[in-house]
Length: 187
Image (cartoon, rainbow, N blue to C red; front, side, top):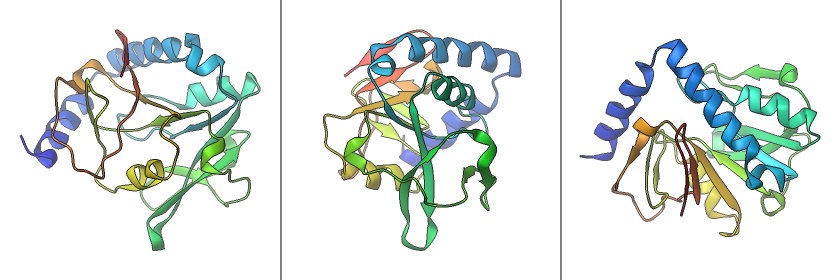
């Protein structure tokens, strides 16, 4: 199955989760992440802010801030298709971009990529080797390609997003952990 077709099919399944089922799965994934050594041993965490049917990361962000972790979220520079990691201390100082996605309103507090301990990466489809299919914009692939490969790159996903194997391009950057409602997959 082609990338675009697979992306659309999995998004359809993810969008069809009931609110109750989604909330239950999100809580299991959040608990597994918070209980993990990956989280406990990290100080500088880069995490996306969920949108649509993505796993809820807002609760994670609030807990991590209370745990005195430094939280960085994406800020997009649309003109050059680049992304920066900008520190936030609350979800309250964010604004919606043109697509309705929350992001910081300035680049103040951005961090060097190699200082991030944990990077939580969004995606639509993943395989057991850590390959990922994102939304097609390439922002995360470009961002991750400039980071040392020994950084902890983690995907949060529902089991329905995991396939045995997917076709990827040479510029696609994989993750080294996937946390689902049922397991933690370590590459």
